[in-house]
Every structure is written in C-alpha cells, then in structure tokens.
Image (cartoon, rainbow, N blue to C red; front, side, top):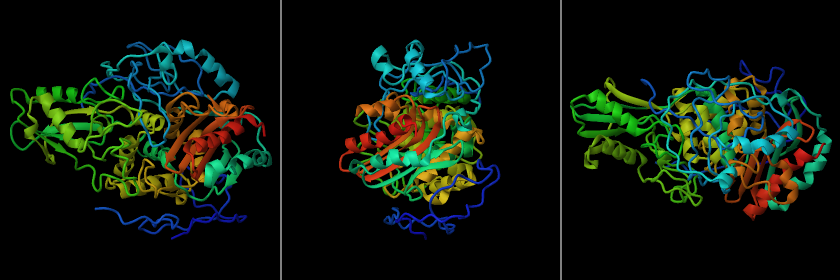
Length: 583
C-alpha cells in the first residue's frame, strides 16, 4: 500500500506503466514529476493518505424529444438550421429538435455555486477557434438565443414550463473530433514563464493549506506547471470528469438505458424493472428534456395486456446491490437535497417534485417505491397493491422505454454537477464490465477503465462516482492527462466530454464565476471546466485557450481554505492568468 501523503521527488528516466493497445500516447505519455506507483493488490488497496472507517452494512422509443444542454459551445461557429423531419442529420449533430427550456431547471450541487437554467443547444461539435473568435460568438449569441436560451440568456428572455417533446427521436449521436487546438495551434508557452506567472497565485493563502496543480499542453505533451501534481487530494465534483470518461468509454456515447415492464406470476400482475436511468420521468413535467416516461410505458403495458386489467405492481431494484449511500458522504447530503438514495429505479433523479431549487431538491425516502406507486397510479392500481419484488427470468416483456443517449446524460451531469446522475452513470461502468453495481465495484471498474485507456489510474482512489466522498483522491496529473486524451481525438467516444463542461461566466456551475476581481473576467467564455466544492475543498479542472490561441488543460485542487468565496476567486485567478499571460 503506497503512501501518497508526501509529494514524491522526480527521478529522471523513470519508466511509465505499460500502455494498453490504442493508447492516446503512442510515444509514451507526457512527462510528469513523481514516482511510478507500484501495482495495486487484488483488493485494490487504498492509498494511505485516506484512512476511512469500515463500510456500512425496446421496442420503438415513443418518448421522443431531444436533450438540452446549458453549455455554449466554445469551439463552434453559429449553428446551421435544424433539419426538418425528412432531412438527414448533419454529422455530429444532436438527435431531434430543440425543446423549450424548463423554467425551473436549476439544481443545487455540492459545488456551492448558483447553477443556471438548463436549455437546449442545437450546435454540433466542430473545431476549436482562437479566443478572439470565441468572444465574437458570444457577441452574436443574441440571434441564436431565439431557439436556445441557456444560462444568463434565460434571465433576459424569460421562459415557460418545459414539457418533454413528443416528437420522434433522431439517429444516435456520432462522436466527432473536437479541440483542433490540440494539434498545435497558437504560440507555445514557456514552462519557466508559466511558473513565474502562477507561483504567486498558487501560493495564495486564500486557497488553503494544501494546493495541487498541473498544467499541460496537449499538443506537445509538455508539463507547463506542476505543484504536487502527482499527489492525490480530495477532488470533490471534478471526480465527474473520470466518471464521464469511464462511462463513455465503457458504454459508448449512443448507449441508452432501458426501463421495462414484464408480466408477473399471476394475471394482472406486472413488474416494473429498474434499469438505472436517473432521468426517467413520470410524464411531460420532467426536469430532464426528452427523457423516457412512465406514462408512455403504462400505455404500452395496457396495450400488451389487452382485456386483462392490471391489479398489482411490483417494482424490481435488483440491478443494484449494496449500500444506498456512499462511504465518506457528509451526513446532510441527502437531507439537503444534494443527492438521492442510490437505487436502480427512480423518477426525476429521486426528487419529490420535478423541480430544481437553489437551496436543494427534496428527495424521496424510497425513490423506487415512489416510482412504483406513480406507475401504479397510471395503470389505475391503488398504492396498497404496490410492493417490492423481482421479475421472473423468462417473464414476458410488456413494454420498454429508453433514456436519451448516454453522452447527453453526461452533459447534464457535468453542467449541473448532478450527483445522482453521476452515481447511476458510474454504475453503468460496473455493469458493462460484468461487475456488481455497488459503490465498491463501480469505483474499481471506473479505475480499471481509466487504466485501460492508458492513463495513470494509480493516482486515483475512488469511493463513489460523484465526488461526494471525502475519502476520494485524484491527482491533478490524472485529470489533465484524461482531458488531453479526450482532446486528442484518438478516442472518439470521449470527445463528448467537452460539450458538458460549464463555460466560465455563462453556464452551469461556472455561470457566476470569473466575475471578481476584474482580472478574472478575461476567462469568461474561454475557460471550460468542472468545478468541485465540499466544505474546505475547492477544485477545478478543464481546458482553456490562451490569448495567443493555444489550447491548455489544467487542474487546480485546494484544501483548507477558510472562506469558500475567497478560495473560488483565488482558484479562478489561475486559469484566468493562463488565458492572459502570453507566457
């Protein structure tokens, strides 16, 4: 068991772990300070830096619609008009047409920032543009907002209540190369100049007592800055970067999660089988656009039963196993509405009502039971006839609905830092690997997938997929190399990661960041990053374009700051300085 509490010293000529076939680093990964870690034991030994207590005991898709995103594509030109029903989808486009955004779609996250309304975006992925072009896009955004009103635009244009679209689904999304800046556009930076620019910021007392930083140029694999870069530290919600990458690699961006109903053991008995879809809704009053719905599933079941009247509903949650809350979670995360109990069946992310509130979203004490009762009501079955049960192995299927494509679910997860989505998306990695869908096996499966991608998985130690656990540990190097791999285009399934990252000063958990002090404003529109916040922990990891047009990826992870607001401003100064420095 390796001790990661002290920063390792760099040793020249240190060998890298063997790379798996298809690694994005054909000549070996970029240099990094620190020692090669020994292999983990079969029990996936935990790093000694964290010592936790012991663990507690389809047929056709009728729901239709599209999935909205609150991001402003940093690397796109203004979108072409949406194709009509008979038109072919353009390469890389999202399926369907843009739905009306949800007037109440705000969500509290453990990031501690005020998230913004989620709206649709019809933009396809194309190449990166220099920072000047990015700002020009924001100037032109007024015309685009007639169809898509994410982030601050919602406050300008207003909006109504969203109902899930009833149109048919378009074709599955096709991953396309993004971030052409990774090929080497723009002026290369000097590591010495970057160090001179960042050292005073990284040493700020506002960040706290522990600060770990990595800055990488993905075009030439040069590490431009490293401070405790190989040492894992509490990542908070930057964990969701690894969750998204592992899930997209394991399942593919077009994968859809099915929720089905099968016949029970007696006439009139039906079994609602949870498939792990966190976006499943009861009806058109949905938080997440274009999702699978129980009312449409109920219609299929009634048709399949013919003249037989439904009399009893069982709900099956056997897909998931183990504890419903994570080891290392703070005791208030469920009462405060930051996450639901983790079950394979739920509606609206386990919320009591399909709404987002800044102060938190009340969660059901038993999400699966609530979903079962809602389904029974749609069938005309009383709640007294709803019980927990299990579907027979050879039971006849009576109906099925499917989620939006996985890449759209990870978009929402990253934009709004949705912890429940993260945990259920993480379970898909375990299921794809043939493992049990519980916290331990999910964490192990995610790290296995990260290692398979040729990334330094030994610099990660996970207890959940959301980052709520204070026992999680991830190094800045692992995050920057993950981002660089996704930007390389050599793993096309991973390029969707960047659509989900919040945009500074515009969307998601970065909507109200990079505002103060004035020097931080230079990062607005050109920094895209996943934030993370727990009490005393503030982190950020993402990508940016310098004023000279160079793409960089970064991770800043700080612990021990006395003031959350001061720490966030100090954190924002680091990527803002990289944007402006011309180092």
